[in-house]
Amino acid sequence: MVTFTTELLKLGNDVGIEVPEDIVLGFGVGKRVPVIVTIEGYSYFSTTTVMGGKYLLPLAKEHREKIGVAGGETRDRRIKKIVDSLG
Image (tube, rainbow, N blue to C red; front, side):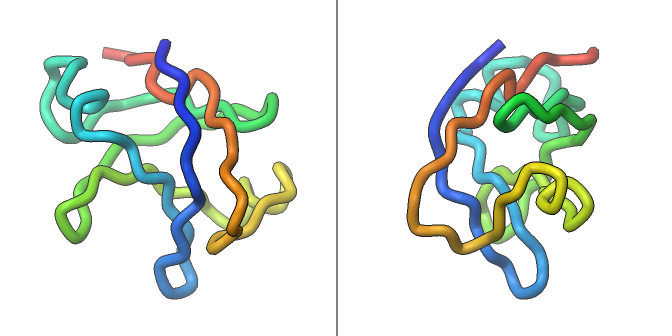
């Protein structure tokens, strides 16, 4: 389990969570890591992806609404249990 603080990135109509490269590569399973993401007690399954040279986790609208967050927020969010590898 890895915990870090990050800002939610607004990417057009989408929102992503940038994951530091060393965390993604530290799992030793490549660039697309299956994970369980937990934000403020709400969890969902996802897979890291690379976009624009950054490692990202998508944060779909349905998840944002349940958590009560939006992209482009100026304050940081605590992202808990961001990379519990399923592999």
